[in-house]
Amino acid sequence: LRRYPKDEIKQRVTEAAQILGISELLERKPKELSGGQRQRVAVGRAIVRKPKVFLFDEPLSNLDAKLRVQMRTEIAKLHTQLQATMVYVTHDQVEAMTMGDRIVVMKDGLIQQVADPLTLYDRPANKFVAGFIGSPPMNFMDGTIAEEHGALWFRGGALRLVVHESHRALLQPYRRQAVTLGVRPEDIRDPSVGGDHTPEQRVRATVVVVEPMGSETFLYLWAEPHSFVAKVRGHDVFDVGETISLTCAVEKAHYFDPASERAII
Image: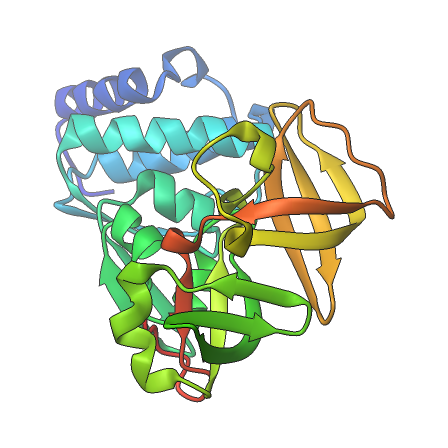
């Protein structure tokens, strides 16, 4: 349509097809292609134009899970090969974390935080970002900060956890005030795994659902009035209805202001 010379058309199409691994498909009609192959052709149509910026708007949303993982890898390799800027819109936080150099997290059309993936994971700006990044998402528990024998504690129903010494200064202004505690599932562990844990870091909860994932197991737990998820070793055996003791890595806990939802820590 742009009236390029035939030799250049052939050279660009061949080059794009080689990059995408679809050289053997060039003679097929669209209806003869699978979903993943059509997706590669769509990307190829963009590549032949040699743009400086690629705009992807949920390009993998219609693919099955296995194909999504495969295409995610292909697009990441493509980015390295072409050295072009790619703006990628997605609702899938796994895609964002695995593919993005910088992630813009948006809610209701407003930017919540802009950072690299690990900064978003380790230092979320607010409760929305904290809950969006991570799988399973971060656990949130409402409670108050109390002072006892010179130490600060988080208290929320059946949960009673000591505040790590590195967090005390920032939480001092919240003494006797409501806060929201945020703990990632991977930071609630079986104490038998080892490490230097004190009784002040222990959580007792009832197992509601057990989800074996192979290399790990997700435990859905209840400790009045909170339900939360823990990620434990894959071959540990737990029974529904069993009350168990787990360890919370309080040094990795997050705290949020319940009114503004902004991160205190």
